Length: 331
Image (spheres, rainbow, N blue to C red):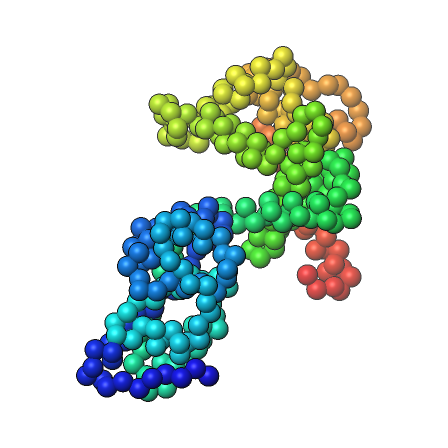
């Protein structure tokens, strides 16, 4: 335990001073600190940092800030602030919990004049900053994990389908915790595929290319938000979306771009929607059997504004519950 010198309460040395705990985000480029942070650093009597490899140190020293690579105890730091002096502690990634706990214990005794303690965030995470962590983690897993390093787009395709269905189930169940987790699993698929795509020998692209592409698409398809167009109803928004999408794709047929591998009811509803939007009058193919009956049902549902796939899932879940009830199994 460090030794705290006793001083006369009326002497200049009794002024408790100030401790500034400076925190930074590793997701922001080093050196990009807030103006209050730079002011605190430049006016401090002493700047300390326990981590000699802290990413901020080179930039602070380049700016003329003298930084002591030291890890003082709470008692030593309080003494360093005596006489009204200010000490700035550049926090490590964990925020110096041992130091703050020690200061709290000292304050709890009531026997030592305590400096003013200020927590000053020097840089902040912007919304979406944790996505940078995901990209870094994915990079390392791809390089070091025996399973992940061997995966391909084709091998992962089935997981994308599974995760999408699990997301839908979480939405239908109304489980917020499950929804958050399943969204993460879907996001993982996107980042994983983008990471694999970086390694393509002829046509590589990265997660930044993926994000940049969807940003450009969203801006182009929302002229009522980012341009001079106006839209006051969802129907007008949909018109903008379909018009700009048609300009982008320049398809020969309204059926182009519809994935045939999707569930049958969803496929039928999508075809019906495209036909209706294009103003075409195409009769349903003549035929007998369950398939044609389901097609007609899906088209009628789409015309009524009902998603047949979702409607069938609701009915199937009700049927499942009825089966469980008949078996005496609780829901």
